[in-house]
Image: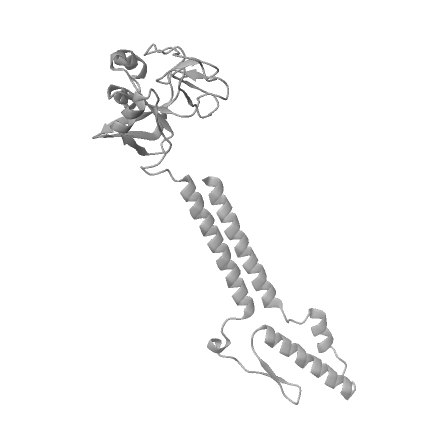
Length: 278
C-alpha cells in the first residue's frame, strides 16, 4: 500500500513541475534580450533616416510579437508607435497553450485516479460471498450425495473440499484441534473443510478415488480422507477452514486459514484403500 501512495505522489509532483515549467516558458516568450535592449538604447544620434526607420520598424515588430505572445493584439500606427488595445478576458477566452496544459493535467489526474482506485480495489479485503469471506458451499443434501459416491464435495469459489468426519473419532479430534474451535465445531457437525492447496509448495491436491486419499501430483505428498499427512515432503497435514451449518446450508469461513495438524496425527485410522494415483 505504501509504494502505491508514493507512486501517486511522484506522478502528481511531476505534473506540477511540468505545468510550472511551461508557464515560465510562456511568460518569457517574446521578450527582448538584454543585449538587444542595450543596442537599441545606445544607438548614436544622427543616424540616417533609413536606419532610424528600420530601427523603429524592428521595435514595432518586436512589440507586436510581445503583445501577440501575451494574447493582446497591437496596432502599428503610421508614426511607428505601437498602440495596445486591451481585450476583454471574456472575449479572449482560453489560449491554445492554456487549453493543452489543462488537458494534459486533467488526463494525468484521471490516470492517477483510475490507477489508485484499481489498486485499492485489488488490495481491499474480499467481502462475504467470495474467497476471503464466508462462502455458502451448498446444501447438506448436495454434500451427502457426494459422500455416497465415496468422494469429497468440492466448491471452487471457496477452494475447499468438504469431507465427512466420523462421530466416533471426535474425542481424538478434540485433543488435536482444541485450539481451533471453528474447525472443531465443524467436526462436531460431521464435516471438515480442507483447503485445496498442498502445504508443501501450494499445488492443488486432487482426490484419488482408488486409494481414497488426497495425493499431490507435484511432489507426492499424501493425506488421508480428513487431510492428515500420510507421506511425502509436506511439513504438516492439509490446512483447513472453520465450518458451520446454517439451516440446510454449509458455510465455510475462508477468511482464516487454519494450519493443518502436525505430522503423525491420525484421528480416524483410515489407511490406503486401493492403488495410489501418484
